Image (cartoon, rainbow, N blue to C red):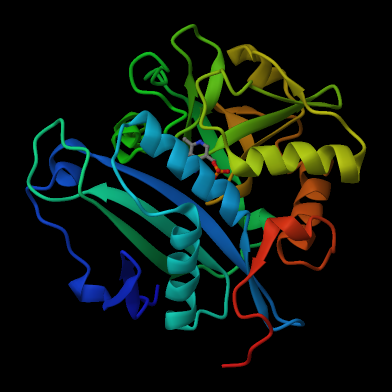
Length: 309
Ligand code: PMP
């Protein structure tokens, strides 16, 4: 993967190698950071790159920082400018995965809530056909973190130690991904993505109070299910055994986009192939994020405004 030339720190472009914070920073010692992962999609016909739902990601970042009591005085509008300037500065004209992270820097202790450094970076990630995204999942023996201890609603790096426990166990056991259950034993989500199952034709997903990150992709897909496929998604508790009884199952998230799960605990999901609903939704999603479908213009932020390099 080619490295970007520049990373943005507090809005200033610095060469990739020089983007550093100290090893004794609270971000490093305690995992004190809150971050966003976003995507930008290239539309070759229009010569335009679209950041998908940038505002929603930044609002979630601000919310996470509030919950974690970080102190900062920059605004969502400034963060958006910094992110877009970073993409333009690197002249990324292809699909990208973007990160925007608020790190607690300095040399403080556990109670340090400032100073914060905001870092924006990009990684070019060419589009992958759905068939190449298929995964086999394991229900993790590790339970999902809980709102009363490590709130999954906050996208802090520290939460990903829970994800790593499940993911690395799944990999050691010969699977690609982990599916976490809540402390109460209901299906929550993957380590880095939400889950939607189709059972008897009904798309169903855990509620936002069900130990999940409030995913921007999940919210977008719920809306597209309704507007494009004419189906309402039911939000409710899901039992573990419903995963085995499901016709279709997929992860969704900015990094995972739509990732079909074709088996759980070595039991095939439905036919064990990518299902028809997943395929239709993928087509709809791809067209909307790239602006080939004009609906939801408010979801797409054009980076170059039609400017050629
Ligand atoms: N759940 C978790 C634990 C995640 O890390 C992510 C990725 N941000 C998601 C769900 C999906 O969220 P989004 O669609 O906003 O990327």
